[in-house]
Length: 391
Image (cartoon, rainbow, N blue to C red; front, side, top):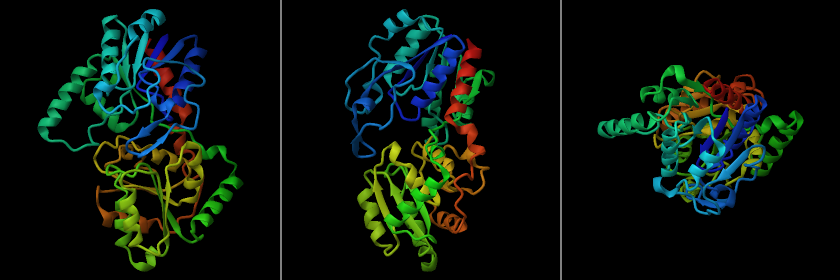
C-alpha cells in the first residue's frame, strides 16, 4: 500500500498518530506520506479563540514523511475558501498512491483534492471530525446539512470513526458499517512518563504555590475561555453551594480566551475562594496542572464540541470528570467510574456533581487500564491495520 494522508495542518494530537501509523505501514512494506494544506501551525500564529500567539512546543513533523502545499503561512484560516491545494496533482503523479486518507473536508483544498484523486481512480477513506449531536440546528438546516454530507461522503469507499457519535453520523450519511473502522481520538499520555514520586512532588508544589491546601478539592477547567466551552458555569455552580462546601473547593482555569476578563470579575464575587487563572500553557507545561487538580470540569454548550480531548488528558492523569451532555466523548466514557454527565447549562446539576466528588482519594492510576484503548499506540495501530486490510 502507498498511502497519502491529507490533513489541513500539523496538529499536536494528530502528529504522534501519523508518526506511529506511518512506521507500522512501512514495517509491513508499505509507504506513507502526509500532505498538509498549510504550515501555519509550524510557523507560529495567533489563535483567535485562545486569543494568543504561539507555536506548539513539541515536534510535529519528526518520524514520518510530510510535505506542504502552502508554505510560510502565518495566519489561521478562517473559512472554507482559505486553504487550497496547489501542486496536489503533481504529488499524485509522482507518488502514485493506492489510497488517500482524508482527515478534513472543512476547506476547499481538501474537497478539490479528494475529487481529483477520485477522478484518477484512487480510493479514499474518510476520517472527519463531525457528529450530529454537537450543534443544535433547525429541521431545515439539518436536512440541507445531511444532503451535503451524503453527497460528500459518496466520494469515499470507507471511513475510520473516532468515537461512537462520529460512527453513528458516518453510517447515517451513507458509509457502510462493513467499511467502517474505529480508532478513538487520543492524545499523548504525558503523565505516564513521570515517575510516581515525581507526580506527587509536582502536585504538592503547584498546589502550595497556588494557595490550595491539602484538604481542598481543586476543580480544573482546561481549554479555551470561550462561550462554546462555557467556563463561567463552574463559578455559577459554586455560587449555588453552601458556604461550608465552597470553603472545601479551589479552582484552576487553565487557558486563555475572550471570556478571561468576565471570569475574573465573577471570581471576585466568590472571594475568598481560591481561584487561579493560569493563562495559556503549551503542551509540555500541562502535566503539573492535571496532577495538582482533583476533578476536571468541561461544561461545554452545543456549539461544536465533537469530542473534548482535555477529557482524555484528565483521565490519563487519573482525574474524575464532570462534563455536559454536549461533549462528544460522553458516549465513549460514560461507563467510567466517577465520570459525571450533566445537562447543558445546568448550574444546579453541576453543583450537585461537584458535591458528589468532594474528598475522593487522588489516584493517578485510576483509569490506567481503561485508557489503553485511547492511547496513541492503539489509535495508530487500529488505523494502520484497517487501511492495510482495505488495500
